[in-house]
Amino acid sequence: MTEQTPETELYDSLDGQVALVTGANRGIGRQIAENLSELGATVFAATRSVTHDVPDGWEHLLVDVTQEGEISDATDEIFQTAGRLDIVVNNAGVGEFDGDLVSESVKTIDRTLATNLRGPMLVCKHTVPLLLQNEGGRVVNLSSGMGALGEGQSGGSPAYRVSKTGVNGLTAYLHGEYADQGLLANSVCPGWVRTDMGGDDATRSVEEGADTPTWLCRFRPESPAGRFWRDRDVIEW
Ligand code: NAP
Image 1 (spheres, rainbow, N blue to C red):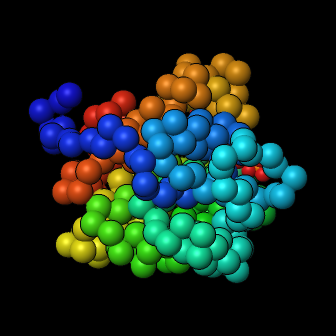
Image 2 (spheres, helix red, strand yellow):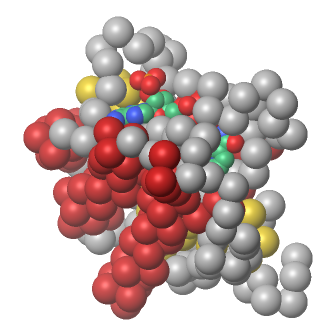
Image 3 (tube, rainbow, N blue to C red):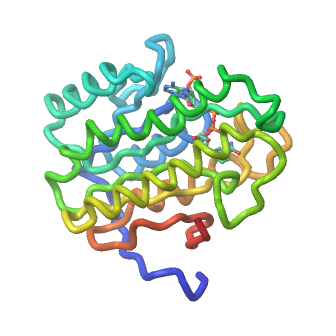
């Protein structure tokens, strides 16, 4: 822990708690959902296609995060089925990692911002009322060091970078608006992870990438929030 890392109090078990994870069919989201399930949470695994399989014992929801109606229907279903919601993991994301802004296509810009930034905003718009029903509801936003203003902003992928800077803005906003009602909103960079997005050369396994996001899901009420984390440590926005 660095000097700036605040003390945390963690749930050892998530028995009786309910979690929604977007993009839960593969990659880091799948691993986070597995971890939360192992900790005892009821996991609502949101995937954008009904053809995506999820393990027995998970609740399966159809959510393309660009489609507000699907997010709204999913939230209704969680309320009707489980009656509560404790954790939202905004994990679903896309990334194209090539040119600079001059060469980035409008299609890539629109798709990336719609999925990575507008998506989490809409998920929060619909789920925050449920999260606020119980003390210490958590929002964990999958961000990236590529969007950190404290890290060098060069090397291409402008839509992805700006989308993640925006996600960090969403975390800060949620904290400012709802922290005094008990909401814990945090951003997390999972590091460079071997998924379809991260590629084979990435330095981390999905288990390592899912570690800090899962840890943030275990935060008890009044734990630190409105922060950006990597490796269980606070990092610069
Ligand atoms: P991934 O393996 O490419 O998986 C992305 C997931 O997001 C898939 O389940 C995908 O579903 C889903 N998704 C994409 N668009 C969606 C939409 N419109 N609606 C719902 N789901 C959608 O990516 P990952 O590496 O696990 O990344 C997970 C998160 O971590 C992302 O937010 C990413 O930006 C962030 N991150 C990753 C790394 C890394 O090195 N991997 C580094 C920093 C941050 P389909 O299967 O249907 O496409």
